[in-house]
Image 1 (cartoon, rainbow, N blue to C red):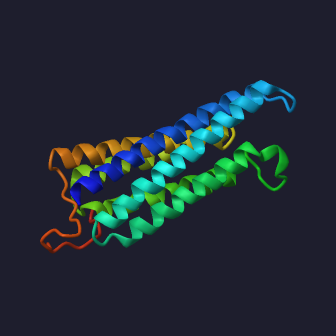
Image 2: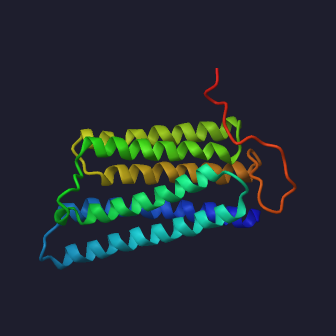
Length: 206
């Protein structure tokens, strides 16, 4: 089960890297967009390939985590909903010219996106509660996520936040994989001998 867990984390890492690629492709797409341009169509196809590839890797990786790790239901459900949210926002982003209610420059959208993403990141503390290195990794990634709101202040579309989120979660998964390899955190899986643990963090306790 631990091999399954590690494979899941690696798939999620690569899935987030594809989400970063999606955001970068969108940057190019909106700089050269023309309704009748074959080049624009090609870039759009590449963007969809990055999106669906990332979405597939994240779903598969998270499924491996869900089926390997014990407990941690809040994290399991939250990250699954986050994956779906990001995929929907990417579809809106690529089709924003045809979707009247979608406002890619909205400050409120950027704030909500960062807040939801930051909360989901916080649930990763359930992986191994009260481990300072994991808590520090999560705090760093939350800070990166909220820095993504600066894109809206600079007049950039929401895809900038998608890029920043991809960077933050890629870093987080890299940290998690490294922590596991160095035995700095322990994630109990199905089939392991049960150990007593309370799945909450005291990082913010006084």
